[in-house]
Image 1 (cartoon, rainbow, N blue to C red):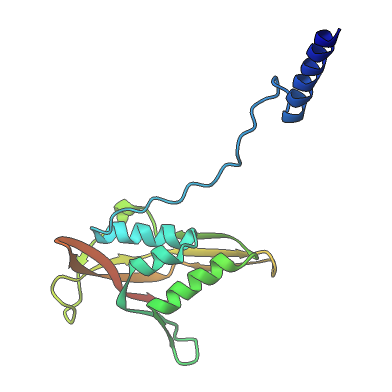
Image 2 (cartoon, rainbow, N blue to C red):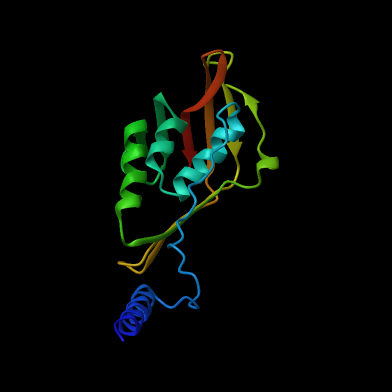
Length: 185
């Protein structure tokens, strides 16, 4: 009788453990899916760097944004209707801006459209630039930032933008960065 009792106890214990860990016929529990981090292009051409700029801005990635801009970067937005007429930006201010977009719970979407990559034309730099610098002019662009707290979409459309790129040789490879950005309203 004792062995029968022991077997019954063992069967009940095994059944209890099986129920406590979940039914063996339950569907598999999968871990929560994580969003895959963006894959950036190597900065070995001005067009790759510009594509990385779009990806880092819309993805709110301040680390990659810092890599896109040169240490000597100067951005200028010329607006004749604004007091002073122009706004100046530095690499640090661009990185802070993208970081603030990342930290804001109110910004639900960001888009940056600089037209199709195949429409980008790489031109020689200005006469005052070093000979290896190049420019990509963007004749029409759109930036949209959707802010739900203010029920507002901030939008800048059809601005003529000129990106100037500077090459630097790092470990035998040429790395391009944005050294100047000019927007004319």
